[in-house]
Image 1 (spheres, one colour):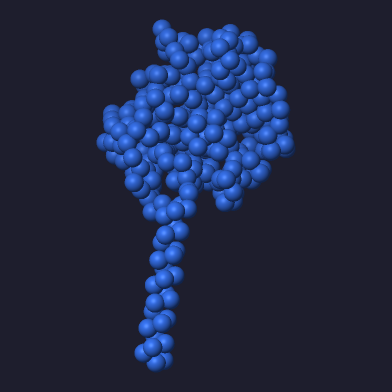
Image 2: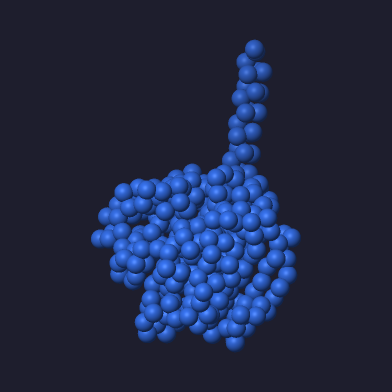
Length: 327
């Protein structure tokens, strides 16, 4: 190769790299070089959980925080990626706290949503997650008024726990294939709760939440819930009971103010007396037990399909995030 041709090729390579760099910085939702990090010493940690977090590079102070709780047999990293929350954190600019269960606490790595000592304020796993929130807000100067909690299955049930026991910390909760607060106690067994449901009126469901934080004057967290119609692990009646529980807490009735479809799936919105959406539900027709995702690079797509993370052409994390004003 002659010196002239070599120099020309060198200039071409540099120009190509420069264009790629400019495109990377100008493209919305560009991939971040950030990675999941474990945090230790975040508090007394009475529930003996592990704390992981994801903070996009260059995230400014005052940004929202999403707490994402994995399901049974899952871990923080797999759920954060599979659900799409880490992808959305880069796209929209917020941080993610990912609690992780340890097998010493539960052999299947399920959060212990059915254990009385883990679901009460100031105790067990609920207190550990609350301490993680406080640590994250302090470390990154996050927006204390824009903290959200979400989870799948046992993580969804623990989301109910956090909304009930620590309502002052969360603006809203997002539950996929989860359970109402106090369901195991109401049904007499976690399995009866999951497979059959508990017989409670809306007021009885609401009273369980109010008893978890006596004297709390509000505002209570709002709820966005997803449930597969073909889920045989957590029966669909549990989303109905979640709706009853949280509409009652908000003083709303159980008649939907909006009934339509989103991506072809039945969707309902329940509003309080002031017209604010306090509960939103998505029934994913034909979906089994899992988190709904829609893998791809489209503006409404997120997530990666896998075990209990199901491609149904609708990404639950995206829908939650939009309802919360994250993007």
